[in-house]
Length: 498
Image (cartoon, rainbow, N blue to C red; front, side):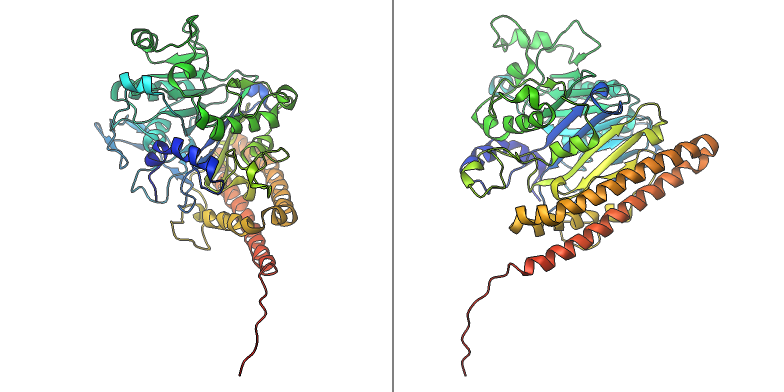
């Protein structure tokens, strides 16, 4: 297994090579975040495709609440980062690697206080910034972020502040984008250098699609409602003469980020694709490699979880850049949905509900286009066994390898299998899972009001039921794909000889 730390360092090289070699595997997350007034039901939504080694299983687990003895120190197995943990750890969900040999990489979850976190979107910092504030060798990195932040916060804003304090005091080991949400707010945070960071509250009526590139635009230092940042950010930039804007505007992505040919191949087109899906009337004249695409847009229609899933499953379908077309000259741009997706998550925090029921973590193992988003309530205290197992060796029992198998079987006959078998299966399964959520919401709210002590048990059972159903159906689908694949086996003329 490659280290994700290593992958982030070679990201630019991979993007450059992918232009010359369309079949080359690449490693890139894509983020979608939506404010509460931009969603169909008033939810806040944060979502991301996690991309890395596609043959390394992810798990989905619950970490129990506990008290840490005074002075408990967390130590990363990835780079040796250390920090003292607060006394009490809240219960939270996580999607860690199957092995913590190179770090936990817990990636995404919801804690018992109704706060969600997704970490991270790998981004990049330019050479001028790195020359004056380089990354810290044992600073905080992706592998540790959820573990040392999510269990200790009670709001999205607190999440930004806790992580920001760690970066300021101990430094960061890499450039990342991190997302926090609660029922009222979504915050997007970017690490620009070893000790400098900024966070922007997502406007309630807007959404953003982010793809491995520094994205936060103007910073209003007088607006504490919508911006948070390292205490010396402004003076750091001024003292080191880093701002390229002649008019003095403080555009974070221009000061700290990159906007080069590699971004035009691997990053900008994914933002273009997501905005094309969610705001078609506003983006019809927007070029696929435009270097001035805005971070935030308002959607043409209110956004649903299904819409977010459509974005995370996209590969430029219906455009000249569709990577499933046989004309390989069209493979120049890196798609959102690709073979290196390890898992995809959509975290929905719904209004006017208790925290245990409000939060739903929709989890799709492997690539979302050939998988399905299974819903799990925030109030669960355990996950199905199939989501707690799986290694880097394929098996027939784990959720990860069941959904990865669907993708592998589809790949040789992608367009044919996708339209004939996979998409109809997904439609049926998705409908049933959504119907189940409607019914279980009603029952869960009733239990919460009449007998709350039984709520956790009910939510656990619903998660198990939905997971079992989806896995059962996809195993049937895999059997169908195996059978259908035999029809494509080549025939050879052989002469019998005595």
